[in-house]
Image: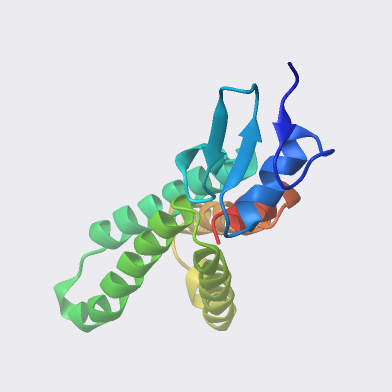
Amino acid sequence: MRCKWGPTSGLSRRRAARSAACCDRAFVARCSSRLILVVRPTSTSMKKRRPNSVQAAIWCLLLAYGLASLLMVARLDWAHFLSYFVAIPTISLAWFTVIMIMRGENWARWFFTCMTAAWLVMLLAHFRREMSQTGVDAALLVSQLALILAAAFLLFTRSSDDWFRLHE
């Protein structure tokens, strides 16, 4: 016997599941006269696997922030220890943002975008000083910039939008 979908009869299973994920009431599917399947929107069965774009963005962020953390530790200079009172909370906030993005929090990707925009403004203000470093430092900065911009792009693709909206 073919399944009858409760409040959204006539829709395909995928569209019915999407509409069920957006409503507050339970979603009922009758697959036979004996079996009634009730799926609540908060159940784990409604949460889709992360799309490839979100996975790639998370890997880009892990590499970029891992690189930033290693560079910060490598450049540890106690003569300018006051700058670490800014750098350490900033890196910690970046890691927290990545964790929240991994959990599907939509506000985290917008916060990441704001953090990236602020970092780009500061980078442009100090561009000459940053590029006057050694060639290795400049290459690491450019690779970090490329990873963060790629992650920002990937977090706003269509599949990423759909996935983040499911978690709202």
